[in-house]
Length: 180
Image (cartoon, rainbow, N blue to C red; front, side, top):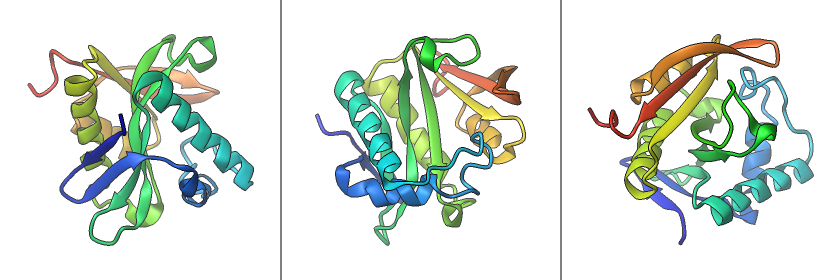
C-alpha cells in the first residue's frame, strides 16, 4: 500500500530516495531545529539515514512521516505524519510503544496553516484507516506555534515533562474524542 493523502492545498506522500535533498534542506536549517534540541544535520548521508528510517516505518508499521508538497506550486514544504515510537530507545514522557503526530516545515511555509491542515489529514488517517485508539503529541513549551497547532487540531494538554533538560508539553487525543 502506498501512503498518500491529499488536502485542499497539499499533497502528502511517502518519502523516496529522491527526497534526500529536501530532507537535507529541512533538517540542516537552524530555524527549523530551534525547538528540536538544536540538532541540525550536516551531511547528505544523515539525510539519507532519515529517509531510510521513514521507509522502515512505512514497511513495518504502515505509517510514517509524509513528504508535504504544495499542490499549486509543487514545492516541498516539509513533512507531517504519524510515527510509532518503539521501545525504551524512543521513550518520551514515560511512554513507549505509542503513536505520535508531528510536523516540520521550512520557515518560508510557516504561518500559512499548512501544519494544521496536514496534521488534521494525518489524524483522520490514523483514527479512520489505521484504527488507532489514541494519538499523542509533544512540543517544547517555548515553541508557541507548535503548541497552538496541537491544541487547534484537537489534542488535549496532559502535562509538562522534561526532554533533555528542556520543558515540554504532552498532549493526547483518543479516538472516542476525535471529531467531537
